[in-house]
Length: 93
Image (cartoon, rainbow, N blue to C red):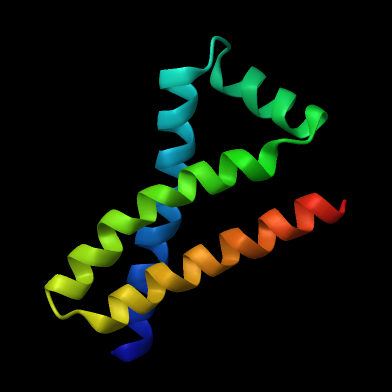
């Protein structure tokens, strides 16, 4: 049960991060989603997009904390840590 709750929180955090990336692209990019992502990879600012998307993880994290669903919140935190690691890897490569 605990692992399932962490996994649900992880999927929620991953979805919020992806949703945040798409929301940022739709609101602030003049290009489409595919073109923006291709350009971000080519120009080396994909890590910045991931970081901006991770900001949206605050919402489910604090909702889970407020509802006392600590294992769900741990899953969201795990998704945020994975995002930070992917940003670090993108900076190295």
